[in-house]
Length: 286
Image (cartoon, rainbow, N blue to C red; front, side):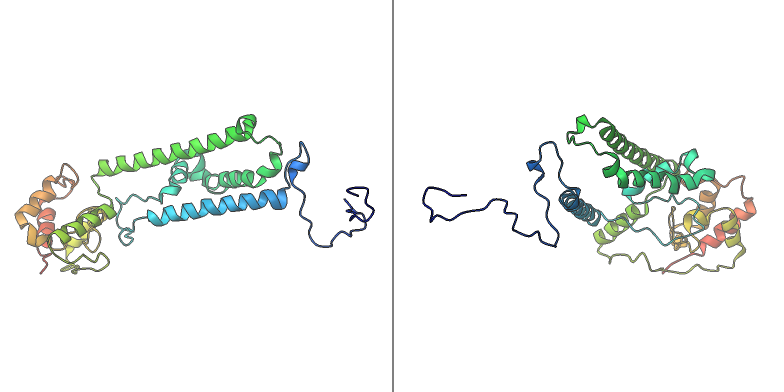
């Protein structure tokens, strides 16, 4: 195209058909050049979604690192009072699997069927929701499903946490990580070294005593652990240094701490209680 009447001016060709199309990948033109059209899914939309996903993932990982899940005591199969709890970001699924139609006989539906439907719908969302409208209030189906899913996750998380707190209060239990923090705080205040919770400070004295069998049959070890190191209840290693035999008899018979330590009067005979108290009085620690 000439810019004037001077024939010596440079001629610029627009859309010259003599320019060969390259064999490599051709980036599509900007979607704004086509009124009413959306941008190309690959690579424009996919690249932006990938970048947003990376930012969300980094933020999520940072949150998990800042608030790590507390480590509990070593697993104890004899501790029947232990309340299993997943990490906070799985509480909604943990509560969901408590409902009858996704657990027990229907556990396969709850653990595989429902998650497969949800993740499958998320995977197929770009192909199912092909509308060009971007405003969420003009996409009622997709927006409604998103809000319902978000509200369901929040509701199940809150219900799960409230139920956990209620069970702790009902059983008179203290979470393991809270108990550890308290013991560490007390050690620091007393000028003692931090306790090593993975190391046993003492062994059970006379583990073959018949009273040990009585303690196991009465489910005492469910709270105090097989090694008497404490689980949901306090440790009994060294209890002979703290309580006399008479005090142990009274505690076993009538209980303690408003039912946190149950009363075994009527469940165990007087001879069994005396035998158990005698054995516990031997559990001393230097």
